[in-house]
Amino acid sequence: AIANHFTVRVVGVSEDATKLCQQQNPAAAARMMRIWNGIDVGRFKFAGPAGKLTAVSVGRLSSEKDFATLVRAVAIVKARLPELRLLMVGDGAERPALETLARELGVQDIVTFLGERRDVPALLAQAGFYVASSRTEGISLTILEAMSVGLPVVTTSVGGSPEIVDDGVTGYLAPPQNPEALADAIVRMCERRDEWPAIGTAGRTRVEQHFNVRTMINGYEQLYEELLVSKGVRR
Image 1 (cartoon, rainbow, N blue to C red):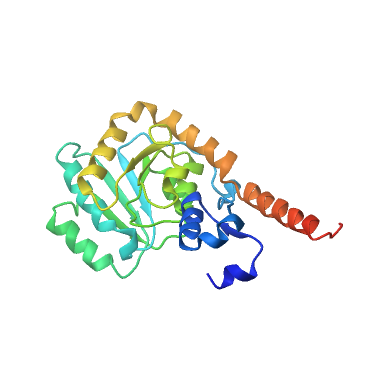
Image 2: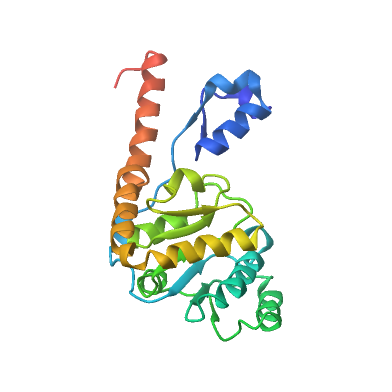
């Protein structure tokens, strides 16, 4: 709030983040705007979904990512779709507890912890869809990367994720910290297996149109130009 007194514009990386800032400091709300974060789409070659029931999730194994909810959801799904597999890419403080939870729930055979990897685009291309279970997010770059590769997405409806994922079109949204709801969304996605290529294509198009790093840069360039004009600075 103090910094807002010395700024002309405050930029949020998502509509959700911008609204939160406006609620916290209504006096500066008019100076706040949204410019979506973006990724270098060219780094993530479109491959489309693999034709197998393999989900992939990428992120720090930390509490805010709530991978415990994902492991519990997979345990629920196993009874209905025993062929489902989950690849978990990343490392962190929660890994020992998550591996223990997987053993306790009897899913250690279908959940694979891959640790830190440098070949994330290649791993994404090996999966049928992407899944995330975060309790909080801004604009998730890993979801954007998965959609750029052409994967349908199942994720929790937190932060900016509902702005990325068009529910029912490019993926499914589920409430956070709810393994049963996340499991239902995963099953719905698996039931649309024949539609995965079309869903993945729609996701890639959405990223190219709205979440490309060039679009983000253009947004900041336009903002800076407007501010220069408003200050009487000529280029």
